[in-house]
Amino acid sequence: MYPSGTWIGYWAQQGYGRQPMKEFELHFRPDGTVTGHGVDVVGRFTFGGEWDRTTGRVQMVKQYLGKHQVHYDGRPDGEGSITGTWAIQFRDVVYDSGPFGLSPHLPKPTGDEPIQEIR
Image (cartoon, rainbow, N blue to C red; front, side, top):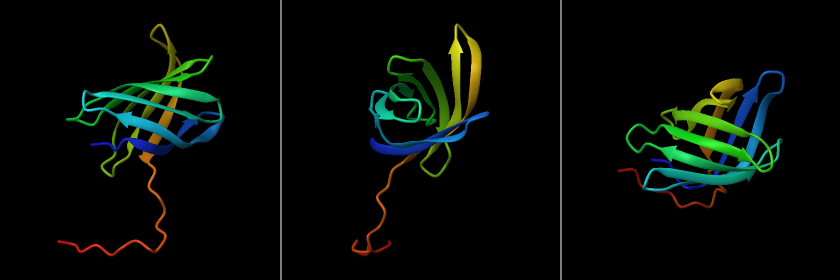
């Protein structure tokens, strides 16, 4: 359902606004696991979690290296992206949360791509 490779996205937080996640990696494996890594305004991070091939639901933990964790719970938006809610929590107490969006990074057309026949 989701392509492995380079993704882009954002997370939004009250008081900080929308923060970009530029070109990070996500790998969706057939066994239902998802892993990844990247950098954003907070720092370097890794992703680890699960995805459901039937529903498209994605549940991941974003671990900032040497810092806190952020839990991501998302669903497909119908156009190939994942939208949902992130939460910083400790022992089931949510300290902060907000929306996020993740999309596969598609290269911009150069104009030299071959024309493909629509069938």
